[in-house]
Length: 319
Image (cartoon, rainbow, N blue to C red; front, side, top):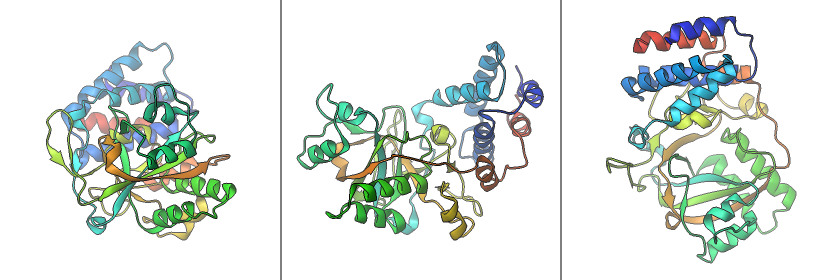
């Protein structure tokens, strides 16, 4: 089914769940292809799979197409990931931080003994004792890296203070989730911050499949498929790294138009030995998200619907 026919169907479908997310996903794809951050031929193949699955579905609406989009993006080979290598030039001497969510003891089961269900505090204690095993990150997904600087650094300093109370720690966790746009983390999850031993400039890894050695890469629409609040390109000047979308309205209002949130890069999963610290940031007892329309305006697609963006993708790849 050509993308143009799907676009016509979407125009007739009532708006509802999934529409705002779908618009953001298509906007990321459009800009990624325009700026050659994503291989157009590979994108065409995945969009064809999306269209075919959508055609077979008994229900055709925005939510269905969003589901098929995410499924198609997940089929990109690992050689297609990490397509925008390059350093965060202003932060080469700073360590990197990745945020991990311990939901119902999941990280304990992954990092400690088989079947273990451990709290975030137990995981941090085991890490200090050298008892954590395995790698940080899922095999087929990128992990997200943020330079240890500015507000991120201040939050982690507060969390490591021995006088930090549980309520203060929960506030720190909620702020970190808002700052990094981690809208997918469940409100009941415990948050852990993992700090690398090496600086951003010294981090190296072999890209999966072709074993090309790279530094951290700027994320593309492929890696950001499950990250609903990531601006895959800076608002003002496109470049190798984008910013996350700060989900706190007051923080966005206080920042410059393109400077809220935090710079982020991605890497393939890293061994536990690559990290020097595991810091507990508390349990998210509550969480509020931003207005979807405000997010779409920050992406520059507030007044464009999913069908319009799909038509643009059709023109770009001829599908």
